[in-house]
Length: 127
Image (tube, rainbow, N blue to C red; front, side, top):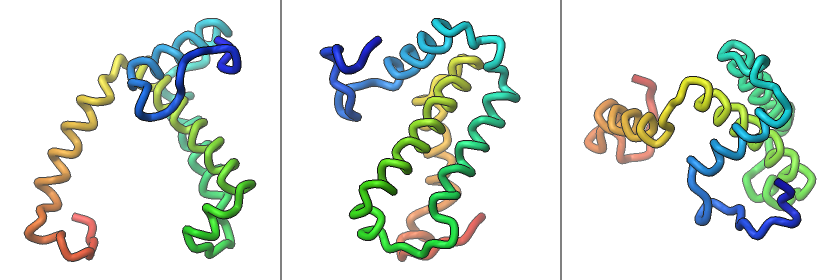
């Protein structure tokens, strides 16, 4: 699909996770890349892309407003984030993971693990 000629609106309030998963699946199938999209390869790709995102901050101690005002940096951050997200969606496709359900179960677990009675004052400690 050519996004420039598409009438599809790509922003968070107009697209579902299901739609994005299908777009990634279509992209991979069209290129016959399924043989490369094993869980091991995708997990490695996620880690590599995450390291590339982290590298953008290496030896920099920038405030959020400095980052947001640097269009070159925010563009690079956006690209690395998208790479990670695309690989995550492809990983979910391979194992038929319902991302929303996994999210719901994990957020419920985290609410129990980090109750407001202990964690409403802005402090954080790993449990």
